Image 1 (cartoon, rainbow, N blue to C red):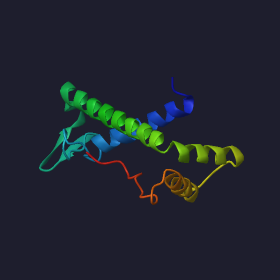
Image 2: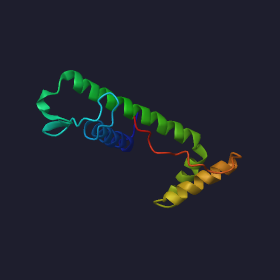
Image 3: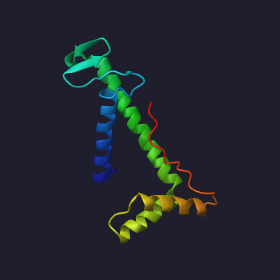
Image 4: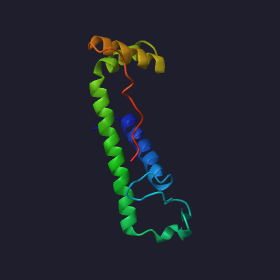
Length: 130
């Protein structure tokens, strides 16, 4: 099971992804249409929000589920690939309350050296948009 903290993170991620899909038009299946607020706004007209079909609501839910699931898998993959850096940061957090981005970058560089790589190449890119 998930801890309370992880559960809260997933809830926040789900809320953000729902906004990406319904407010910011960031869904290939739904296109650049706003599906929130009192009215749906799209090029050429306005539709009352109560007119959303059950099918559209199902598509929205499926898109949110797909994006959250894909990014959770990506996060797990990245954490697995960078286990040495994760362990280093966890150790630092046991000694001090917080670490900043430079500590994460240094942990990744140290990990890359330990793995025999020529340096950290920044493979922690932002989420790819659909």
